[in-house]
View 1 (tube, helix red, strand yellow):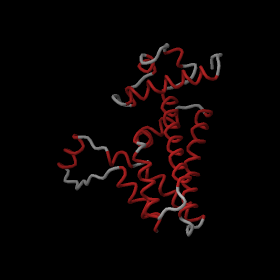
View 2 (tube, one colour):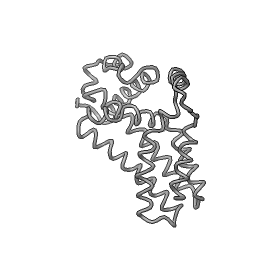
View 3 (cartoon, rainbow, N blue to C red):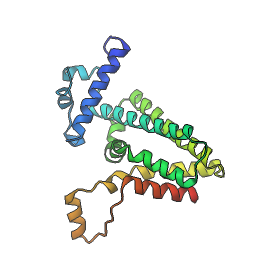
View 4 (tube, rainbow, N blue to C red):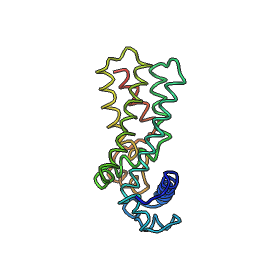
Length: 207
């Protein structure tokens, strides 16, 4: 890590992360390179390596921030409401995920590559954010579903979280995929992120 104030270091990391996010809107994960990211920043490719060793570490940082934003949203919902019905809770969870399209995309498309090609310390930083999301959901269940046992809450979390890893491919379908499914006579029914999340959360809460 180059010498400099923490403020400058964070600012440069944010610039790199922002450049990567911009590219990811138009390009695929595999087509994005450190050089292409550098072209969207004010410094060189070599300078980027002072902060991130691989492009996967940059993407992991994006995913970490997405988890942190999700936790903020979940925590605010918990703090701002004295009570919620189970249906309202399911809707709140669904709404929080609907706002995190990038989180869902990264989880479903590139999660393994990001973790496999990042240093242990970077992975640990990410896991802290991930762990906070587990806790935030558990806190919501504790507060608004008082009839749920600790075991029931645990079962909800370890069903709901694997479920959300697969939401993105079901809600974002290309024209090419639609044509292929029609030719294969697959009866595809479109559901939004909100609809899928709400249905799953409601069933798990009431199970």
